[in-house]
Length: 303
Image (cartoon, rainbow, N blue to C red):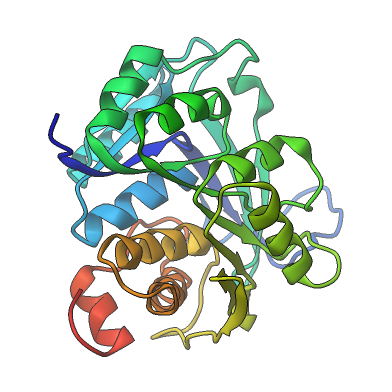
């Protein structure tokens, strides 16, 4: 079968309610007057990666569970508006939701609704298998029930990436994903000590050839060919507004470079550029960096 999908994105579809707060941490008070207000919009980690990949010209397909609810309709509309094919499996518990408190400096604090998934949830094996055999690569979100799809993806022969987000280097739930992926992204936010120890443990105990640890305004770390290098931060093109989605933008742009046979260092530069761009986009909007913008800001030849 022809591999007519560049990247299959599994999981991470949902809706966020954005609440701008005067500071984080937020002191206790009976009430706050919020300006610019409260807004609910589609877009969680898998959505942002899928839209980021699509904006860079990669043929992208998104697979996840969605509810028959207004939140699910928002997610479906988001994909229609951005021309990203979406296969949504019915989720009786409803579409994933979160509330993000966003401070004036762009930092966020997220609350995820744990009632929107059940331990017995599964993505249908025939659907996963059929989409995987059409795909060059699969990016797997750590949302339930994607862990159960990892053996099917591996059996299909597709390469796999995942983002562990703010993993502490110990939780066995994220560890399962780290061992199954060829490319592993994570944040340094919850790591104690040097990120290098966790990154090398991922490579040693799993399949990963590439491990990337993002460190916010300090840039990122790249482990490739057993060598750890620093990825310098990129200055955002305008004032940073919100860090929400920056890690997803980094992953999408890195995968764009990697799938176009760029060096890991060049792919990481793409990631840094895209992550910086994402920080300038208000949390209530969805505007991933385009291929032209990425290549212009990264300099050099077109991928």
